[in-house]
Image 1 (cartoon, one colour):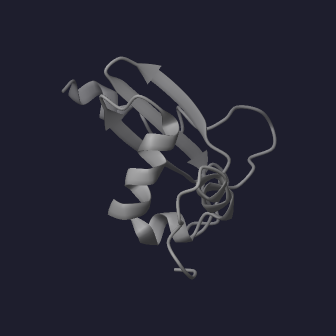
Image 2 (cartoon, rainbow, N blue to C red):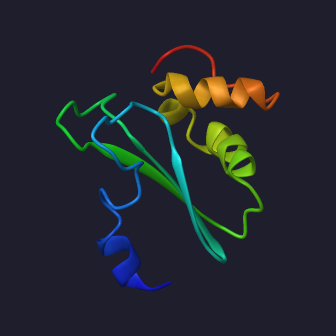
Image 3 (cartoon, one colour):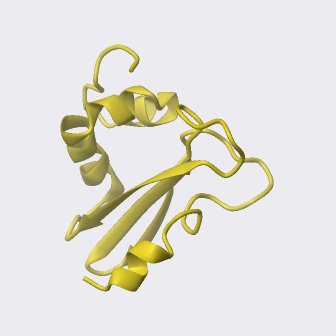
Length: 98
């Protein structure tokens, strides 16, 4: 993996625009890498706080979110918009709030 990718990831991939809407992700694909990033103030409430998932060889964002719900349930629990997306995909989101 190119280490320069990880150095430049913070704040690069969340949705653009003035309004930093919590938990609404933006998808970036550079095969075989897929990145889902969103503004995240669930722990750090400073402006431009964000989170990202980086996956290899995923065929869709929904596939990544489904795996993230299993591997990182505490992160997904803090994101109402992502939990809603999982529900719409027919995937049971993690229970409760972290």
